[in-house]
Image (cartoon, rainbow, N blue to C red; front, side, top):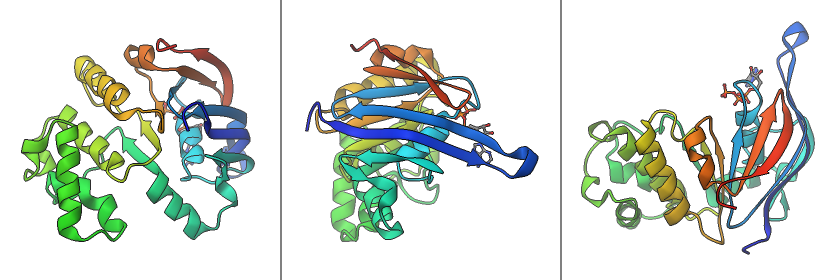
Length: 233
Ligand SMILES: Nc1ncnc2c1ncn2[C@@H]1O[C@H](COP(=O)(O)OP(=O)(O)OP(=O)(O)O)[C@@H](O)[C@H]1O
């Protein structure tokens, strides 16, 4: 799988709004990301980064163009297959972690497995194993509110990888963290989460993490303006 194409987008267009408020968030965007790579999407606010991430990860349907993930034409799938694809193949991490406050840390990590109908005890045992992977094995019984921001983001990463997705997408994962914690999180993702069978795509404003990227896609006004090699190349 390594070196093969994980995500290939061709000619993506996306519009929002109606009438005078109608704006084109993506204008004929084409990109590629390979297994084994960490790719960053950067650019000014409103340039279309989150829209692109949402379209390539099966959350937001484009108005034009195609997305192929590991050779599967994503948006040609019926809705139930698309939902299954997202659950089985894609892990999501967001800026504000999106953890469930009433669940324990371990229960939060177990949620994707429960959705896949794994028995509760089995799912919790697997969640515990992934909490250990992210260095939080001793926090399993705590609610997320008892954890620091960096720890909560590591819980969100454990939850995103517990069902072993081959595509991991992160939207501004360091934006709520101080600089050192943000770097630590991305170093962790780069060295412990990225592997030759996985592709990681990150939307970020954080220049401190550019050095970890294989490629950096620069968005401007809905267009892909430039693709440059990141510090990892
Ligand atoms: N749900 C929506 N409804 C209407 N317009 C939207 C919607 N989502 C995005 N847009 C518009 O599409 C354009 C691109 O937005 P997008 O969120 O993709 O940019 P971004 O580069 O991720 O910005 P930021 O860095 O501020 O998060 C913007 O003009 C935005 O206002």
